Image (cartoon, rainbow, N blue to C red):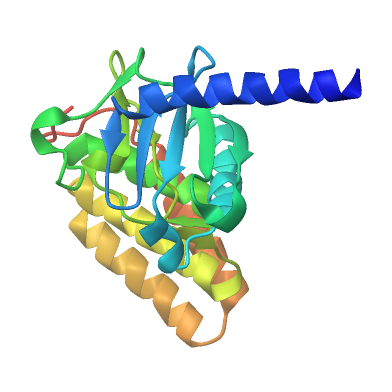
Length: 231
């Protein structure tokens, strides 16, 4: 019976891989380090990584863990699972499919967010910084926007890491200052950045974080487009 059970299990796994292989041949999206295609589980997608990802020092488990932190904040797709294989070939993350409610800015996928899009993205990057996560490589190819509200959803945590101490302060400060600049508050951004960095350079990490948080709190209050900004 055990032998028969092993055969049935192997058959099921093989059948699943055939379905996933068919889905992989028609990807939702593809890049240098991975491709995304429909999962065999309705409502989910697979992100399968290519060998260059690992040659560049990529860590699939850490990437999924960082995405899970963002998902808890409601700003990234929920992670459903991780599958790893010998040698890393075929390693993949299964996650929530958000296409029903979120869409790309198709005309400008290669560009950085602008206007109110950039304000909202940096509000989310600040939230992540407070959780000890630095997320980089933010262009519109790695961001989707809610079809109704324009709220961003962050994709691709391959260029991300954990931060603490002065690095966490600097990460929060950068996101906040970028948000101010996107909102047309360049003078505020300059004063804010200089104030925090002066405190950091003087070794006053706690005071620097306090000021960084105060600035971020102000950025979070920007909830609608300012004059001259896009939606």
